[in-house]
Image (tube, rainbow over all chains, first blue to last red; front, side, top):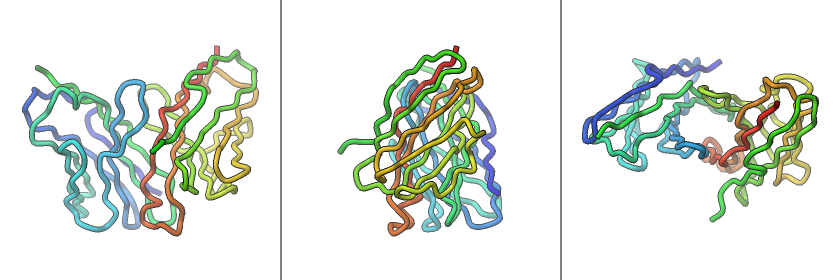
Length: 113
Length: 118
């Protein structure tokens, strides 16, 4: 069975500062990993995905994530936070042949002016 | 192109009533998923369809919940004898089918239906 842990339910950063949102996964087989963003009263939007190709994955809006098998991590980063990045971010895992996602509990990002 | 659509966007019902939630996936997507998101939580898987058949319904919490997809496109999630604990946002997602691996693993979500049981 797979699982995802997102450390930090709330993260605050200053505008222009580095954004780091943590995601650790557990899976007995090679995982596929995803980051989604959810703005208030909206659905989930795919930011980026890891499906066993390059371990450093670039997504939309300047976000990127690195798959580290040795650390079972898939942390999301952005060099410089923007006010529009304020939202809730979810990490999700699935595996080949499984299809359903297992989501973390989410991290709410607040960007301070 | 059009994304995943869900209707209604909001549904308020009384305890014990029956409700239906509708999902219209992206055209050409043969895989469809239902998730439930409670306040302050991540989405939880309910059921997955490949075409018309439910390939995995392991997330349905009990027999009050049922979903159909009779023509392999639109899906309806049905909840009987609603309880206050069913209040949540119900999310639908779709993806390309198994022949499009690994793209099947990329799910596109609708805006959700917020269900409130009073």
